Length: 176
Image (cartoon, rainbow, N blue to C red; front, side, top):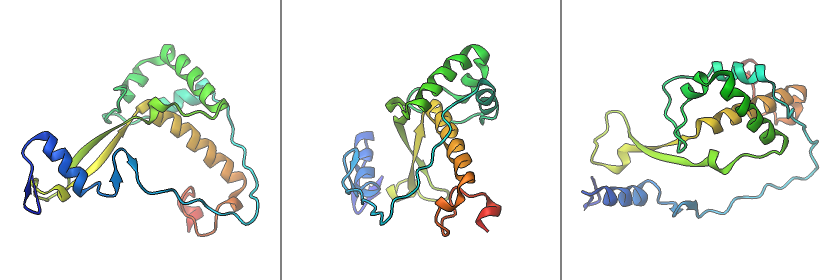
């Protein structure tokens, strides 16, 4: 791998080159940029989301999970959740219910494996020909799907809470 006359032959050297070229705005694992605090001029109405989860709802969600997706650091694929049936689902239900009731997102669900994927039709020897792909826990993604559906459900009851120019969280027909 080559960048500006700098060559990388070992895995460690390639990682350093990727850090230097692709992740140049980062200083180590945490971003060096300070988050910008939003200033609110008037208090917004609080939106409550549903914090319960039924076995039927979880069963439907698990049944609809995609197959052949990469796993995160926990190495638990969607297929394992589907094959676990009711025996596994009862334990997942308890975990997800506790997470919802306590507004808790376990740190283990946030662990990420970063994989570099080559861009189509780009030379492999240039670091800019690669893009990072973050692999997250499938269990974490299931919890996030549950929370996202709760948020979507709550926003449908109070659509005025979204700015008129925001298209995210709206269905295609609502955005048009």
